[in-house]
Image (cartoon, rainbow, N blue to C red; front, top):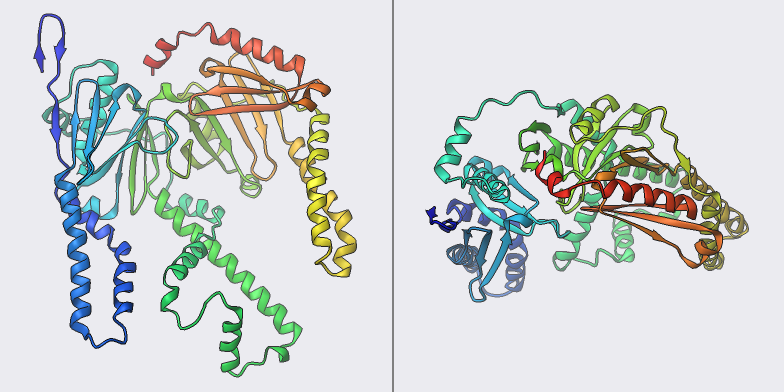
Amino acid sequence: MIETDDQVMIEEEEHKLHPVGLLIGFIAGLPQLILPIGAAIFGTRGSDFGTGIIILIIAAVLFLSLFFRWLAWTRFRYIIGDEDIRIESGILNRNARSIPFERIQDVSIEQGLLARVFGLGVVKFETGGGKGDDGKLSFVTVDEGERLRELIRDRKEGAEVVTAEAATSEIDTAPAEGSPIFAMDGKRVLTLGLFEFSLVIFAVLFGVAQQFEFLMPFDIWDIGGWIGIVDIQGIDLDTISWTARILGTLGALISLIFVGIATGLIRTFLREYGFRLDRTAKGFRRRRGLTTLTDVVMPVHRVQAAIVQTGFIRKRFGWHALKFVSLAQDSKEEASHVVAPLARADEIWPIAKEAKISGPTEELTFRKLEFRHWLDHWLMILPFFLAGTASLYFFAGAGIRSALPLVVPLLIGMFGWLDWRNKSHARDKNQIYFRQGWWSPQITIAPQMKIQSVEIKQGPIARLRGLAELEFGIAGGSLEISGLKLADALAIRADALSQIVKIDFAEVNRAD
């Protein structure tokens, strides 16, 4: 650091990635080399080349992959400046990305299984642009990742610069952590997995089948080919009784359910293993993962709203999930930060209270949306479903054909009514509440002091019916309440705006 009479100039720090990260990246990228290696081997099939040329092809592909990774590593560097962190990369075309400290909303550290063996991790910077991480360092030591997290926070707050030696010393001498405010043991993680039914394994298998279709002896998407295989086995499909066909179908469905449950259990266990949420001086710190360990710190003042979710089945067992809406994104699959994936109500509200968000009281009155809004919506979509029903009418059997005109509108009306029945809103002097969903119920709670804008929307039909939609602008998300009387929408907007103008957002952003 260089001090002058007028200002403090901070020397730029230039760093490279850890060299062991080359090995980790190379091993992690091996599955991507299967396709080119397989294509090369398939191209030499039937030729005069022997096993030696195949080994040479495999060695050449592996060498080229490692060489280009090494070349990219030599050209990669990150520079810590006074006001930003710059990431320079590229072999032929040089890319230089500058990320201002004041724009960085989240710095997370992610460790895969192999990276944890070497004490390395991936540091991800997110600015809240909605595209996941905006910068990534693969790989640096965990101490370096912690130092970068501390340094960026201090630069944002104008505190003293943290050097690498000081950050390491601070980590080594930090006091032992206390009890987490929420944690999940193995039993609860497995319980969550039972509710996470997933058939993603079939999507993966279909993708693999498409990639390696050229290695199959026949077209796997040709039904006639499969029937031919059955005929070769001496099985005549016409002789199979209806009882056997029904039992076979039930067996296939049971197998499908079993695979879905097993896939959900495995995915959940790998993602949520060791889930721990701590309330630190810097905010909420969440760590989770078995094969890939993620470590995320979210300052309390960046929590803009809370979402409490459950499901049609898990609600019967008293289980809920808590998420925080913030400018930063949790992951590519999840926009809001999951802080309690499976918890009881008495576990959720103390966590929300730490973010200055309280649950609805018994005295709070929820109001349903206007019934005519649901009726208008139902009448608008009904013609499209009737058109679809008419197209199915020509392909269905006689029995189904006669039931379609009655069943389809009935189902539409029933699901629409359930949706309307489970939508309601409320507000008090501090917060706005919105409930929705019958299959996956959730309640969104937004402190009025965190609302940045309030917009009233009216379509042509809504204007004729005297209805309106309210959209509250929240950093990192939005809250929409439709089907309100125009007078009620105006009153809610006026009340929210009166709360907003009282807030000094500069003070809110500095306070935890």
